[in-house]
Length: 297
Image 1 (cartoon, one colour):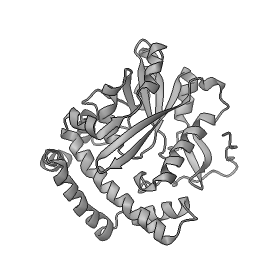
Image 2 (cartoon, helix red, strand yellow):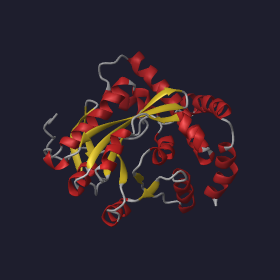
Image 3 (cartoon, one colour):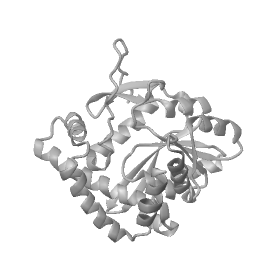
Image 4 (spheres, one colour):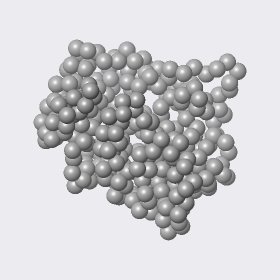
């Protein structure tokens, strides 16, 4: 009942507002979230300090403030996503080089796309399917609230993206071999206890990295492409794709995981304010006796 009221009385009405008005709301949200509520300030501060030990307190504080401004923009942009025309999505999320994927259409091959929670992944979800020749499919963790789960799925998939759980992803890869798909993985969340973790150094810290992209790529012998979403101005983004490998079976164990994690790290180090710092990324500790990976790059 609460989620239904939230959707119809808050989310949906706000989604009809123009961007210029939503950004005024974002400016106000920043004051509330950062200065008044201090939402996860300790988490963000700790993550930044551990990730950039060479930066001064002043530099870290500047990144922190820029991050919260970006996060508030993400909130209102995500709300707009519930009711945005595709021509506006197309204008605000530029797909720069779809030919990286299109070359595999000629070969009759499906592939995987891997990226992180960087830039605006929600708007990317709205843009991607109509800009490539493959059918876009994204890994999705269902919400416990069935009503909001259905509304979010409906919003993200309205321009073609297919949202599937990990079980459904497996079934889809096995049953749709005739359909060329681009299966999208987010790689930067902490693996759950039941998930295989690959331990490596990421942002100067011992980090448990999800191994799923590499595991699936080798299992299904599918190419892996990395995608980075760059913020060019407020509400405007560009996506660039880079081929990681078209022969995953030839790479040593861990190479693909290290490669896409390093690509994300490079983007974060260049513009750290656009990554999801309020996520408790390093909540998992390396078990005693479990070794760190040898650097393969």
